[in-house]
Length: 398
Image 1 (cartoon, rainbow, N blue to C red):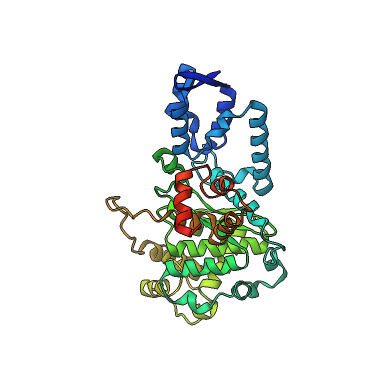
Image 2 (cartoon, rainbow, N blue to C red):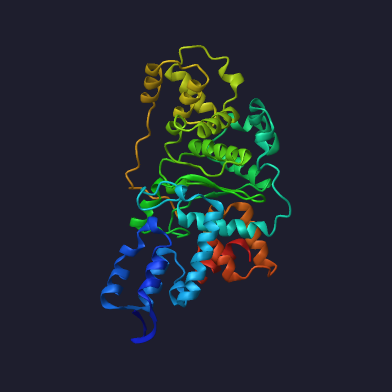
């Protein structure tokens, strides 16, 4: 037993087995190795102030540690049940696969947001499975028409702005989009050891017949450029249309399409949306670096995605051509870390992580007293933070 101390006195005892269960909720984060908990095991005590501070760092509800064992077991069992209803075990991240796959903390946050969003959406989403009912050559067009996406918007303008436009169009039809945020607003843990766990976090879909959710790594992974995110977004949207949810897309998406027929199919549909076949039919061989770069500049695809698209369409036919076109891509120099982006307002970060439509639903729920402030904080932050909540309310006019 570990004594929980408050003002020098023992407030209650925490079973070591309960401590282990709580810290194992997110095995990919290696929370059991945190110094505070290692010392608690050694000394058989922990102060309430240290526990609260550590929970704030880890974005964990400290109230979990106060639950009776039977209540804790019930909470964890319910969490596992929800996870298994959405994902197969082999797609869940763990310590062994270095953060690849679906990160459990992010999955839990999206499941909670999705369950809330379901309460304000009346009917099933017609897009789910719709691509299985139409011929292959009509699927890209169906995506554009269903979500009322202007094709011209995909061949002009800044990629970051276009990404925002696409997300808005998807959310109008109740496909919610969450973007991973990693800043001092602490909607996800930013402690260095844990932060590194998320660096390989993947894009994935949380299935639902009313409000399917797409997760984009965005700020979590430095390699997630707007062009890469747009491709990932359409590929994951394709998965929803095909009702293929047990898959994740990581930073090696372009190379993994050779290993998976499903990923190859998703890449084909997504790239047809972003670079129509009628455009590439007019190209002459051999494909040069300048042609590749011009296409990447005009269309919402990265240079490497352009190359692989052209290969899939038979315009790059030899391994030598493919290798040369990939190796000659000018890589942007990696950031030295010397410059830091200004932390956005808390409401901006919440809109990105929760999805703008779900954030609007949360605000409306609080305003109409259909949603308690505590519940809203768990949805937005993952734990209760009254100061952060007051800042959020002030920014959105609550």
